Image (cartoon, rainbow, N blue to C red; front, side, top):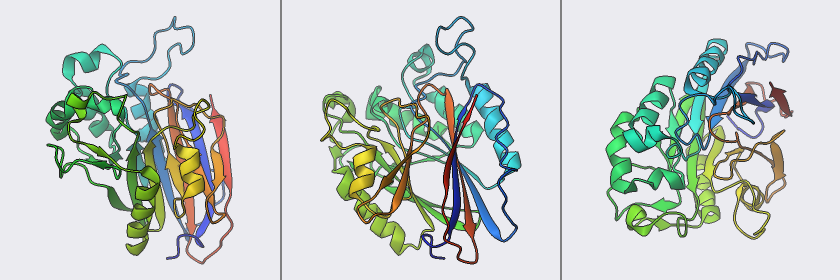
Length: 306
């Protein structure tokens, strides 16, 4: 299957995880001859297990693992071919992390059926040894293409990419992390080597294309954009300076987007960039229909759910 010519419709929804909103796509017509994949994504949850309190000035009664789990389950009932991923900074932000060290976060994500995550800078807050101690509680894998862990205890525990087969499709997913200098103490990152995210992205695309992946996704924790430093690599510049990536699902900058950003890549093809805010307040949703017969029409929509 040629993934470029077989994308018919792409719909991207950012949904408030606190609301039991109707995320049904019944109004979007698709046939039994199409392959339907749903991708759900989170980022920068930062150990927020409970919903915000009722008297919170910005997010009253919003968020919380229980509501997110219910929303995820409702989507899976609608489409069993659902992939759930996270773009990093799972740790740090509430006393749950201070007390349990990440065990609770990983156990709850495993119960919700996460299949893959990348690493954020705060996931190093208890050091590499602290992260490694919690990994047995994660019944999902970790990917990072631009952190070289070969001289650390994490060597072999984090892969550059993973290929997941779902809905009859081969989905290639790689991870990217932000530069650790200035964000993570050296005693926590040890001998982790930061590699150029743009160069590593193109290497990952080559490997995933050789594996005949139908869809290529980047789980990014490099940030959406930086107004104070426009030359700093970010999701938008990554999309513009590479080719072969279909979706960049971001993190790190806690960016709430009214709609996904569509960027032309280096050869003029569309790359969809999205980020789901922070603290589990939103759940990103992407629905992709692959036409078996080669229809090449592609559409991107954003539906704001409140």
